Image 1 (cartoon, helix red, strand yellow):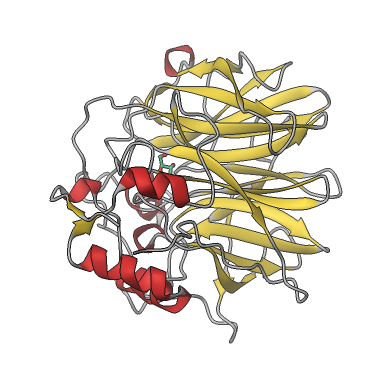
Image 2 (cartoon, protein in one colour):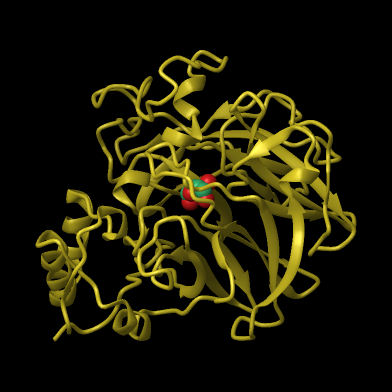
Length: 382
Ligand code: FUB
């Protein structure tokens, strides 16, 4: 494989010690990739693109943070619509300055993905000013709901709802954000009894650490890590709230979701390979609740299981080892008897962290209900 040196750190594959360890375990190939990264050598993206496990669902726009759902027998994907808005890079994610959403649809898992055009623009959301981050959707009684985080005119992330009679929009936004909503990355889960729950939260630019006292802490506005607990303290937790019958509001005060280790202890902030960072998703498998999420700065998609939608959930393992790019975000669906992981990476943009592409790959369970770890960069190094 041709090695090209690319000095600009924003284009480099993000690797933490935890990630290196993960890769080291995987195989000789991964070890070679790790060594290349450690030596600050970059990847030949063209060759990589041909050999990774999945290709972008669409290439004419950049898409990320896929929330996949099945409505009327078809697959609909609700992604962020990545653009380069010219914002400087920072650890608050200011460069993720997206303006609108497009919905993708597929008749089958291997069909071509269709871009259904504009679904909602920030200019049509009265309370939102900027940064249309990872959206989510669901359906009830023939109405489709698009849930989305965006910064309000005070620079505070809130979560909004927009509705449509079509899964692809156009969606009409509610005049206000969900009352009592905060932070980012909503996941709207329909339980077997017909109740809907919203899971949400995200650290650093997602502002979760600023809500520890129940009100927004606006001090040190430029710091992504101010107000995070110490390494020996319990990690910040995602939130869940049951939704009202019309899915437009929280029916209850959001509650923290506990993520525990195998000894029943809360994961600590310093447990960077396992603790929650952002990108909640919930699904059930054989009656068990699987809460999955990204570990953010260690770039893993992990999961924890429990016996009810509120948890607690016990950490189980890694779903996806790091992709090319800083962020990792996903959804999991069952379609025609098989399970699929929708995720994103930055290979199409040659490593530009805010220009991502949604992909899909099969996800497999072992006999005991644990998930087989997926390696997105499964290719032989010369
Ligand atoms: O797309 C913007 C942010 O990046 C999302 O909200 C996070 O989950 C991360 O993927």
